[in-house]
Amino acid sequence: MPNNTENICDTKVFKKLFEKYAKDLKRYIYFKTQDVNLTEDIIQETFVKLWDRCDSVNYLKVKSYLYTVATNIFLNHIRHEKVKKVYQSNYVKGSTNETPEFVLLEKEFLEKIEKAIKDLPPLQREVFLLSRIEKKKYKEMAEILQISVKAVEKRMHLALKDIKQKIGNV
Image (cartoon, rainbow, N blue to C red):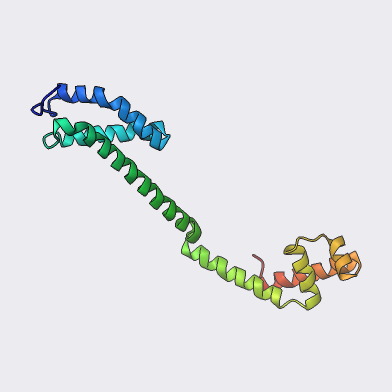
């Protein structure tokens, strides 16, 4: 068994440690991640950290060091993924790729449409909302309102004409 005086910074000793522990460490991390690429990244980063700290790591405790470092890297990855998910869910909810000018114009346009619909005479508004909001067909609207299909068509025509005049030709 090697003694405590083995120098991990020696490339031959480091290579021997890699060959001795890498395979078992990969199995251990793969069990946690279930992702081959992530496992490889964690193993690589673990041995890079060992190499960076080769002067300060006790040779007799190198196995414990490797497992601790690999586990910590895995846990940091999990924490980072959670933060990314929170950020992405917040970003999707509250942002847009549109310019502020476009967003403002869109808001003003929607306000114009809402006002135009609100200002329609009640019979025209009723037909318009049944058609555009509830997605009813003219025949269904005629049955609901107990009027002819022609009357529904006439009210819809007048509603659309009125809305077009109020919001302008867009």
